[in-house]
Length: 290
Image 1 (cartoon, rainbow, N blue to C red):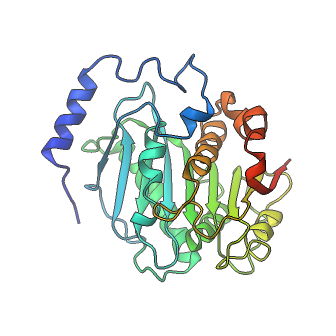
Image 2: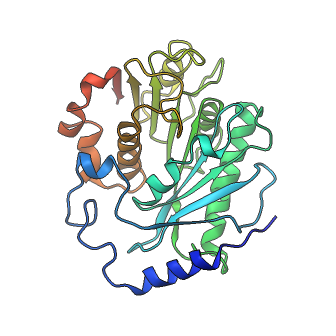
């Protein structure tokens, strides 16, 4: 089903594109160092959304969030919800990531009960949708996506799907971020994309010692990976409605994409260095490898 953007959205996009300097001089832009504050909130770019792109049979309804004005093509991010969840449970990631310079597709699964392997195929289909938008002349993102920079993310079974997709389609993605991942008996020794596993120590639905931590350990030591565990955090650490510390979760997600999708070394300190050290009391475990 094809859905059209509103006239107001199109007018806003045209107006913003005609205004010089809309994004100049803001934190995170070239020459202006990123800060904890700038990564803990929406970024420098105005964000619009659209849903009028060709449907994919692997997933249901979906929304693309994108930055209105960027100096160069942007990377793409596909995000899947968890068991019985819809877009609204994770859609805060859309404007947050898009405002920092990414095209973000947040999807609904065909069935809210879809298992992780089905969600994995939905994520890969969504990545292919984003790549196709770069070449579709009617797309607001025509010619504006770097098709060689694609990441996937997901919550719970969507997190399990993220790990499966990274394991089974290593040539399709360049970064992965599962949060609160659920996938029993997961062995992910074929993952090569830099992977940030985020979890809560008090998760009752996907107990970390049986899920996220074991998933992390199964990723090869040769793969760049980080395990981030929020002390006292529950299953919904990255949920739009129930997340208790979204600024911190968002900060690490943005820094990971900036460092490993964009290759921007200014963000390394937020994962491994001085800026990360200021967060250390929030984590029950924070493990890096290699």
